[in-house]
Amino acid sequence: MTDAGVQLAILSSLSAIGIGAGCALAAVNFADSCLGGRPLLRFFAEFCAVAGAGALVWLVVLGLADGNFRLFFALPTTFFCTISYICIAKALSPLTGKARAALSRTADSRKGGFIVRFILK
Image 1 (cartoon, rainbow, N blue to C red):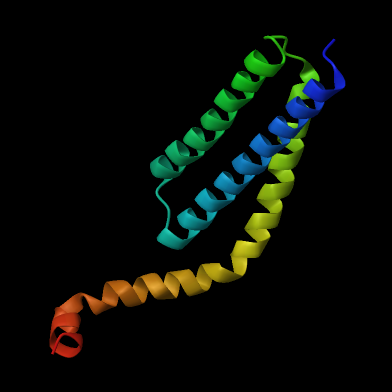
Image 2 (image 1 turned 60 degrees about the vertical axis):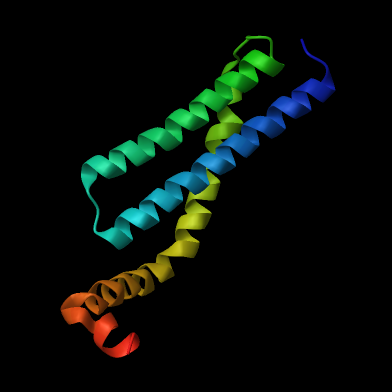
């Protein structure tokens, strides 16, 4: 068994990985809902976020726990990922309509040379 300092480092690292993964998944969800969503792009974005978090978990296991994986290592990562995803998604949900409006304004400004005719005069 490892000493208390290493156990604290492992727990802190896994919690930080979970928080990062939850924030990344919430950002993917927000971007997908604002842009209208393409299922394949969303899948690849979520896959990259989860695969990156998984790779970091294995680096922590190999580096700090000497390659000994314990089932407990999945708990803090999953818990903090879920909590941070819920919190960030709830914080970003009111901004979805505003982001869609801003994107439509940007798209509409390019139609008919609006920028050239009115702004660059």
